Image (cartoon, rainbow, N blue to C red):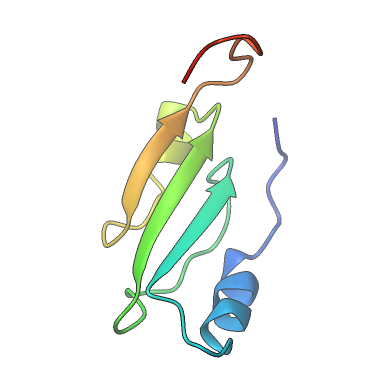
Length: 79
């Protein structure tokens, strides 16, 4: 799942330019990406780590809420 190389800072910057400005940004990733050095002011961030290894999960920014999402979840699983 994933091979790294996507720079999430680009998408985050683009979202911050939107009007109205978002209160929350949700990022889905394998975790192997560069992050902003600090939380964007006035915006909360949730990072969904898809099939994340312990190594990738440890790379999520400390200022964001990180949530692991298991790879291969059953399609018929009820929410």
